[in-house]
Amino acid sequence: MSEGLPRVGSALIVRDEANRILLGKRNKDPQRGNWVLPGGKIHAFESIADAAARELAEETGLTVEVQQQFRVYEIINPPQEHRLVIYSWAKVIGGDLRASDDISEVKFVSLHELGDLPLTPLVRVVLADAAATIRRRSERHRPRASRRHLWINPIYGQGSLRFESATSD
Image (cartoon, rainbow, N blue to C red; front, top):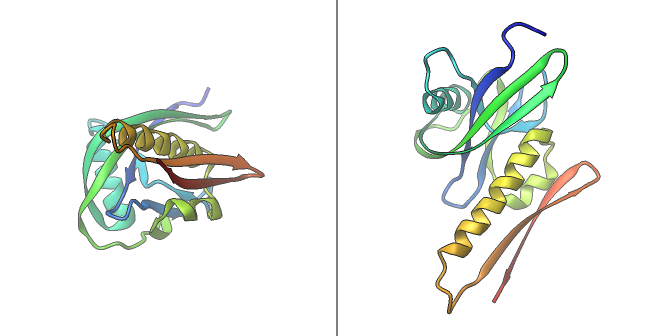
């Protein structure tokens, strides 16, 4: 087994006022050219939230308020890669959006645009899980008498992920 594995990282799901998700296009291997949720390695004695905020600022130029943790995911590709990535929700509180060396492009993407982007396999799963969580929360907070449903359904097929939105009474 390789020393120093598994690596532990922290990444953020950042939504803007238009409910778009912040993504960055990786500029290094592995997964060069694919779109990811910004984040990176947690340094010794650094909190999960501090690591995520630091990495996001380095990669995107934005300052965020890290909110609650979402989920932990594991990547295992023997013999070289074993990672644990802790995803949290965050909101932008400042900064100017720009790409860094690790990220060649950075932008907020609507749910409808996600299916057209090359996302890493992990990011596909995280965003599908996040969409399901958003849907459940919005359903819980609507009054029963006038409840309307916004369905954001991840659809897997032929290597791409597409989100559909529909409203029903």
